[in-house]
Structure formats: C-alpha cells, structure tokens
Image 1: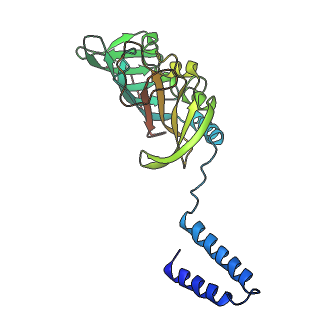
Image 2 (image 1 turned 90 degrees about the vertical axis):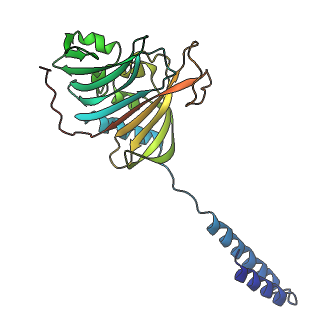
Image 3 (image 1 turned 180 degrees about the vertical axis):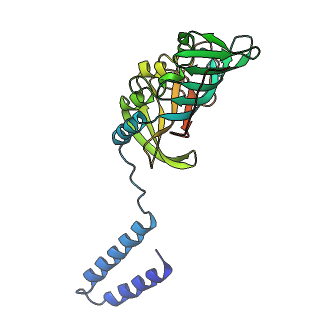
Length: 259
C-alpha cells in the first residue's frame, strides 16, 4: 500500500476516534482501500484455451495440409530404435524427399531418400541411388505416414486424451499453445516405427493457424539403455524425447525420381 494512502488512513482513523457514528464508515473505507491495493498488486494471468478444443482444431487444420517441412530429432539414449534424426519435405499424397541418419551398430551413417509414386530410392554414404521396396522405409521411418488423416499426426492429435493446456510458448518464431496429453501408442508407432509403449507427450499448436508445429514424444528407454539426462522419468520408468518439428506448410514442393 502506498505511503500517501497510509497517511490518509491514519488521519481518518484519528478523526474517527471521537465519534462512534463515524467509526464504522471509516473502518469500511479502510477495508475497501486495502482490498483495492492488494488486488491491483497481483493481476490475474490470461486464461489458456481448453486443450480438447485446441486439439480438435489442430486435427482439422492438419488434415488440410498439402505439404510441410519436417525435422525429427531422437535422443541419443534411445538406442533401441535405429533412427537418430531425419529432415525433409513431405506431401499429403505420400511423396517425400530428405535425409536420415541411422545407427548401424558400428556407427551412424547419413542416407538420402526419395519417395515418389509408391517407390523408394535410397542413397547411402557412398554410391548411387538404389530403388528398394517401400516397405523397407516403413519399417524404420515412414515419412509418408506423417500427414495421413487416418494414421498420422492429424489422427494422433484427434485421439489424444487427458489433455491439459500448460503454457503459451514461441515455436518457429510464432506463439503456440503447449499441451500435455496421453497419446495413442498405435498411432505413435505408425508415425515412427519402433516407438512401442509410448503413451504420453507434448504438442505445440500454433495460436494463429491451429496447426501442429511441434510434438515431443516421451519414449521409454530400454533396460540396457543408459539413463537419459534430458527428460524426466515417467511413472513407469525413465523416458527420453523424440521431437518432431514442422514448418513451411503448403510451400511448393516438387519431388521426382533421382536420375
């Protein structure tokens, strides 16, 4: 309470001492000023939108996406799955182009991939592109699943439950709502094969467009994996994050078979 206000209250209280009629009004006035001063010192923060509403809007927005750029980062403690990272461009028709870093046991190696017309072209650290069965990619990392309305990110956010809006944060330089939720393990493994048992995580939904711009999956570490240092332990045991970030929505993308 300000010094000037305290002086005024002191003077009013002295004036009221001699009058039993005035005293109750002075007391009420003091109480009113005290409540006003206290409430102005701690304004209430903004109310965050309910998570189910945000997730429903995100599922609708993501179902309309035609192209996107994607970046996937896997915590190095998750040695039970071969992929370490991946980035590239995807289309809703199932075409994709980009690079992926895989753990081959003896070390990590970068691969370039092109998926178009239902065909997979893969190029290792040396040599040329080779055409391989598309099922090979689906068993390790299936970029064609990410934008699928039935088995990709739109379905993942639509089926999320126990969701809570935690905060507003910037992603890709724009404000987004961060939501923690329980996720469907079947859909998680569809997006990133090998992530069995994953059932919780966080998603970030762009405030202006309702698009899903980031997802962080809390993946249980295998018993033989070292304890992660970048993620808190879940109730059932330690976890480590797999982070998927998306940008450049609906930017023009042309994907053709490599020469």
